[in-house]
Image 1 (cartoon, rainbow, N blue to C red):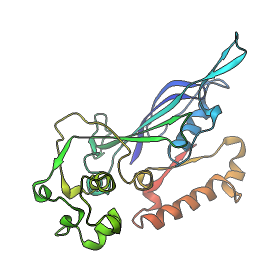
Image 2: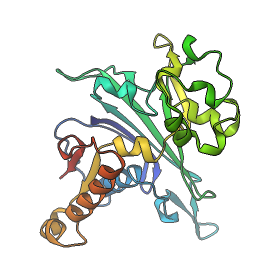
Image 3: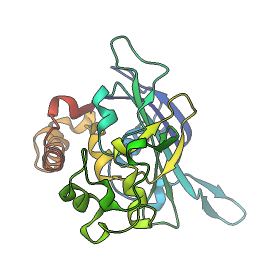
Image 4: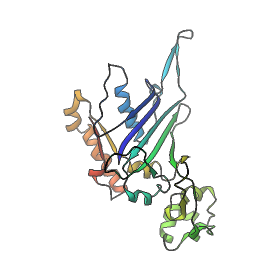
Amino acid sequence: MRLHELQIKNFRKLKNCHIKFRDTTFLIGPNNAGKSSVFSALEHFHKNSNLDREDYSKEYNEDEESYTYEEEVEIIAEYHNLPNEANNWLGFKGRVLSSQDQLEGETGNSIVYKKIWSLNQTKPKIFMKEYPRTRSALYADCRKVSDLVGEHYSEVFLKDHFGEANFEKGLTTAAAKQKLLDLPECWDVQVDEEPTWVENPGGIPGNVLSKLPIIVVIPAESCISELTSSGGALYNLLGDYLIRLEASPKITLKHRLFLMP
């Protein structure tokens, strides 16, 4: 998986920034143009963290002698070259899209992931684009979580996924409805229709976030300390990698690393 395109709105000095990435991408500009803000935006985007007030774009009001801050920050990232098995990843069914600008040798699979931070909220809202879907014929008559027990899902798995207390609850209840969307065999996807945004797709941020590339920002002026000190970028990367490895043992460093110079 690789980062293909990034859109940043109202993050610091980046009012409306649009960047396309390739194997090597250079950001060139004068001081205070917003180059470092791009890397900071990427770091926040790939972490489950909130923004500070000063991360919101602002304008100075001379009449009131104060700053006016934007209400929201929005970052959208498009990732290409997902493996074909991504369609069976938990939380990815119907959200693996056909990419329109793929490079030679790539799979043609992509995802589009969005975060919106608001000044009056403590956590960002999270979205993914997905194709319209309908319940598959095999599970069309299921009414309760327990009805899903069968060829694809065991009782143990369903109790773990939905919560044991919800095992006998209806699939349309708030406790079960969202998690049902994560089960790929339960759905047929209409890939010939236009994908739309869906808010808070199940498994986010833990599941989907664990699949996104790891971002490491190493400033040129302090690259040695970032690579060797216990609080540097390399140590933080390895710590983050070990956490993700515990959550998903199939992750390999070769496929999870995305370095920014």
